[in-house]
Image (cartoon, rainbow, N blue to C red):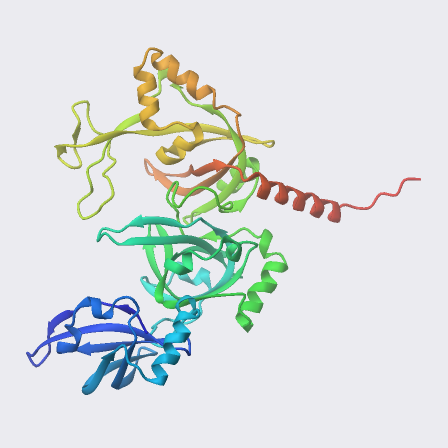
Length: 451
């Protein structure tokens, strides 16, 4: 069955010959897949011939080793037949219809560096393709969107940690992402082959390639090592986050991100950060939003340029002047308000002022930037906006993700602490976590016998 195919590619060989090729990925009932290259007229057939998981019979495929993987190439004397009606073809057709299309395929053509500990990815040249084995410490709901090419896509982000006490976000796609949430819950152990690791947003993130594989609860020696680490204290260990997630990325809900701690513990740990950023997860409430600075009214939003950056679909987001002119884009274009707040979050132990940007600030205030601007422009004016903000104080417990890193300000090293995400607490999950903590404290406390 053709599980994937690429567009045709025309090029000139070293000998000056004009060539056309197309790569297809085929799989059979052995739950393995391999890339096969087609040439010339065979490659130039209509895309529709290769679509919808077409069944094919290919004779005359030469298989070679390449970078530790195996690739096939259809010889000129070979043959390519679509929808064959042989007993072997019927066997493959039945396998595909009876669950083969949702099977985790082992790719023979996957070139990767082998199983690697997450912490070593900090210094490994990127991009690279690796195999990972770890525990899912966080996962997000599926997210559907349309690509630039108009293709409907579905993804899910999971955060994987291993015994090197490091974690990284890995994006799953398509049917792998759409598997039931219960598979990713309860700190599932996974083996992931074919993870493409790239630099992103100041950190490193992975994406599972189509030719890779995702196996839950693997029974390998490497998996047993991770399982024992998690059971013997890894679940309480502070993790070094390799991925710097953007504020509000993903969807709503999900588990806490980063090392769980109180506000007091977060502040103490943040003062110790080095050049490697740290991520903390705190449960607290909004106590205050800074509306004055040295007696002057502090703006709660700014007007940002919404024209796309050159070579990107992302908006510029630079501040525009009163006339709407963006110095970065050198023009007047679309603009929209963006929240930028200084919020004081508090819990039982302490409180902390955190810079809170647009997407996260909207969730904290339960108010969009457009609504904030309209409120200030309305009859109540600035006082009406501040009154609306105050109504949010201490209203609900929030799961707050805090990012701390060492920055340089006027040539002086300074810790930069920001609120990367804030969402209403999942009370069920938080209640279970508190009960677990109580049981652990009772188990560690000395037994007192009354006389």
